[in-house]
Amino acid sequence: MSQVQGKTTEKFAGLVDHLENTLATGRDVGASICVYQHEVLVADLWGGWRDEAHTTPWDRDTLVNVWSTTKTMTFLVALMLFQRGELDFDTPVAKYWPEFAANGKEAIEVRHVMNHTAGLSGFQERVELTDWDQATSLLAAQEPWWTDRTLTGYHAVTQGFLLGEIVRRITGTTIGKYFKSEVADVLGVDFYIGLPESEEHRVSVVIPPPPEDFSNDAPDSVRRRTLSRIDEIALAPRERSWRAAEIPAANGHGNAFSVATVQQVMANNGHVNGHRFFSEKTGDLVFQRQVGGVDQVLGVDVSFGLGYGLASSYSPVGPRTCFWGGFGGSVIIMDQELGLTISYMMNRMDTGLMGDTRGNEIALLAVMAAMS
Image (cartoon, rainbow, N blue to C red; front, side, top):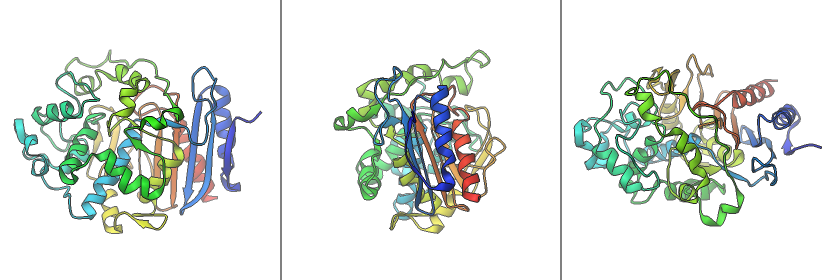
């Protein structure tokens, strides 16, 4: 009996077989795939189970914690504020958030936060991630862990608090609420940074990956300090307090359809469904490589435009492709040359912040179909 529901065009039908296979072999427990090409929905698939015990089917409107795929929503907000003249990427963060200038951070610019070079990839002190004021106050007071702004160190959780506080200082509202009113509600999609209690019945709680191995890392390394609580954090989505909070780098809840519907904006260079969120000139900034090299936290070669990942030896994508993904495997990819938006969101997490090969396999199938 087929586990996969939804629809595809004939060209993209291979994605059905792929998802059937990953569900049958246990590589996936529950998952969703969505692909748009030139704003046409060419694949909208879901299947499997919302829970590890296989008791509740994954439905079209099932929501799951997508981890760092959430970051792409914060990048969109930043681009919108830039377009509106309210945010400048080359301006010091302290212009918007004066307290941030403490401990030698007065010259750190917004672009450094976007591109993981701000030197604040983790918290120096123990923090309750559901406490916004505590998290942002600690980051404002903290001394950077490195000073070379050409070196990246993936700000796995901190980036969302940093960008979110900049947005709050500019707009007077939280980044989750701003995203909802200015993006999600405009497009009519279910993606939440801070999940309302009314949507709890739709949630598939993620299945944590095997523990992280730090045996080869020095105790004071940037990677180990950044990821010291990663195994604990992997369990956090089981708690209502995590789902309800705004943790903009890590706790967005959605599915492949909602993520792809929003992030089409990058494949279409600024517009979605008749709504223009920023100009093509602003969108072009994303594809200008800002920094790159072996990341101190991820340990692989990465390149960043404004927030989004770009082509590198680790991610050999096209010159007009941008992307990012989440802890355990979720991924969103936008290719302007093919007009493609490819989204994969799931509940069974694999090892590592960079996930595994499932998303790449889906992307390859989608690209081949688009080019056929």
